[in-house]
Length: 389
Image (cartoon, rainbow, N blue to C red; front, top):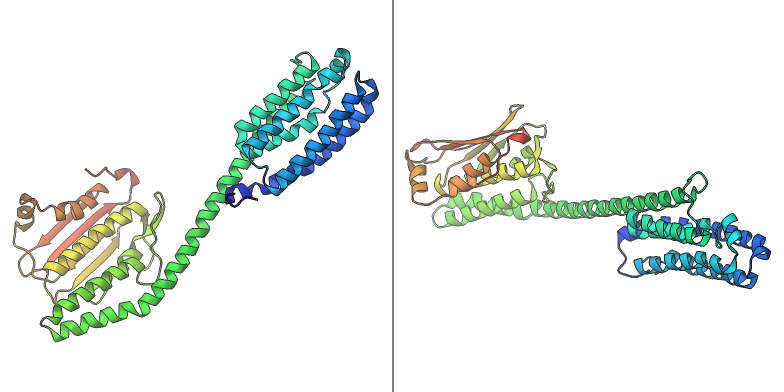
């Protein structure tokens, strides 16, 4: 089998092998039929040659499909063409009356192998087209069209066989692709968890120690402490405080908002959240956490070196409420509108815009010396989501 063959192709391997078992049985039947009628043919020698061709081509296809090199559209097309030509050979080796009274040589049952192969390789449409080609060849060999399907059930059987086998092969390939993606994601998650445990036990603890001792020493060392604390928070946000992987989540899945917020906790940030998971659409969680991260960054820059930040998550059934409060220096009244008027839209876009895009609201309370508190309220209803402008 070629190195380029994909897992999705390998998924239909059992179908290919089962098809060759069916092929072997139909070869026996086709040979038995031709032996029984050989004396009735106008050209028995040609009939024998056709029988040999049936056996040779069946063996070639069985080897090609089992070993894999024949599992290509080109080979399947050749398979269908050869089968149709062998069926049309009935025009040469048998009289018109014989053809009107009998099925083609070789038999329609043997010709179904090409339909099966086309369905496996190309899907329902390809299987149906192959079935129509075999039906047309059989009709031409017979010399007239049988409209009454009760006397010509092979038409229905061949069409059903090609379409059903084709649908089954497509479903198997899709399922295998999804299984492969899930397996790779599980492996990546396990590796991410392993690395996060090592980082958590080493790097994070060192950064926390540097941040704590740096603040105690003060002076220029305080700047180093702030950098260490910031890097610790970012690492915790990336890895997750409990060692849980935070791989990107596909659209339409859910994430635990509580777990994501707990990952923001460090020696300056305290997070309070319900013990039970609070699951929301993954894209909603990403936007809420993004707003919280920006509020935390603002607190780290402007609240003061000794300020602490408190994050509170509440689940109110129809809504979730996230509060980010610091006990820092606060801001003067009108400072945020003034910053927006000056073109500094960081708060508007990075915080308020994220929450409003989810159909929620963002409210801030601040005063000089009284700290700053953000409150984000986001509805759970999916139909409340608006497109961010």
